[in-house]
Image (cartoon, rainbow, N blue to C red; front, side, top):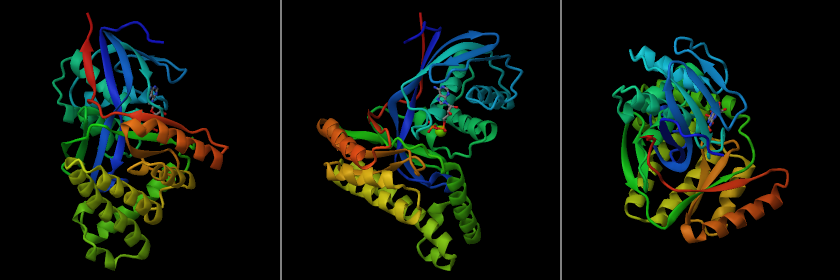
Length: 361
Ligand code: ADP
Ligand code: MG
């Protein structure tokens, strides 16, 4: 399946968010890790841009001064040029082929993986001198301003700054990050429900509006600045939603401390608590996700929760590596029995390094 080698090979991970659900757009705490599932780009510098991907049927070519959006995946590539040009850079083109082991559009951030594959390649091949953090910030702009998806900084930070064997504790306000060692012998199992996230855009935007309105009333920018007492004066729905975010920020800190201590039992408990809270008070779960989470814990996982935005998509479970396959098999069997109409699949994920570029030959 692998194509010819380009002058450069880029390996760009996806990410799994361990905890910190919906906290990023209120400048809260999150803790993802970069996955070994990744996008690969084989690229050779050229005058214009010509790209294709094994994940889609369309290929595109365009000169670097024609960045009219195509309303298709190539906008993640065009957007990278647009943002770099806004910043005064003028990288040349490339001929590139993307292949991916990431499920696309499933909450494992194939989009940030794609953006950063392009950004990191251009940075290396055209000597742009961008730091990893800067590449993350610019890639978020690609997604926000060019593609038009209002995501926070978490995905791009994880993909750019991930470290093998570590999660990343990210304060999305500063934004700053700290690697947190992920214990040996423990793994993340990602379980995709086979349900696409259809309601996600409208529900996501509603949640966002509600909590942003609440923060504005309280006169603060970050959910980290809100205390339980502050919530009392808010209307019920705002109190409910923001209350969840306040507790979730605290849980990220607790989960980080537990990981640092190698205390997987507490880490797992915090994840499970987070899942139940996001289901009950942020209403971002689904029957399928709840089922997977409870089935994983019943099968022996240390903890589990939905990952990504919710409303379908995937859940994660924290498991001992030597039990990963048996837990996955048992969850999948129970799930198929309960939801015969869905086609679930799972992935074992290892914490990996952020995007990396190799010059070939
Ligand atoms: P996620 O980031 O969770 O996978 P998104 O909806 O944010 O989901 O991004 C998915 C979109 O990113 C796809 O619809 C496609 O436009 C683009 N994309 C990601 N990876 C690839 C790829 N390897 N090839 C082509 N398009 C891709
Ligand atoms: Mg995405």
